[in-house]
Length: 359
Image 1 (cartoon, rainbow, N blue to C red):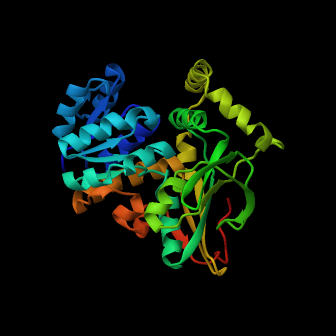
Image 2: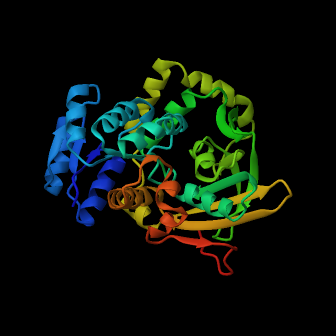
């Protein structure tokens, strides 16, 4: 197996990635800032490891230059991605991560020409953020070449890990109102809960979905060329959320309050247990429309979000090392819109199934 590094190996998702990598016969070099936690995971799987603080630029660049690829799993990525991306560009090392943070996508895509010069790939979002939505959105947009708008919605019957919750907290603090949409090519901030609709998923049930700042509002224009993008999630929001959303985002800009919230997350958020990982399902819908009112839509059903991330992340490592793409790419640009179908337990529908699966 090729020589690659997994950074953030002792986090909730990092451990799932390690387990999936070993299951598929890989022996990645494990890395993380905490020496004791990194050593525990490495010893559990009989893997080599290195203690690596991203602030130690010389050591970071030296280690990264010695591997073919880095899979970066330590968020919030708004704080951690830039030094790792710079090390990968310097060392001519492929970079993958599992971010869902819009500013990180925007930043990484700005390095497209540099990555092509170095003959490496920079592929953010190779987990549930954003492989299923990116692949399904690209799939429907390709069927409507003059698509002017793209809507994507998902229902995830799981719960967030501490790392995901903290990344969401950081993203909220960086917004002016609470959510983001793309309108005429520009990112526009709107109050959380302002845009909502009903969507019927492939389980046959109809849910109220609310616009959220999901990664596709940054990535879909690159994947499909569509310049008007809205992402939705089925989340219960109390009445009046849109009115108080700007206040919540302003509160999250206060650094001490954000740090206190982050510590609370560490204490109380644990992520899905083994049973939920194995039994929960995730549902995605995408619809492309053109100016004449024509539309194309499709549905996707797949496994629990963190289980999906583990499998998709390692498959993305394998595809990158096998195909050697270059440039700053979305998952569907790097591997094709059918990449999501590589994940066992995933099905795509062009029409709603006649005998839907129960949620």
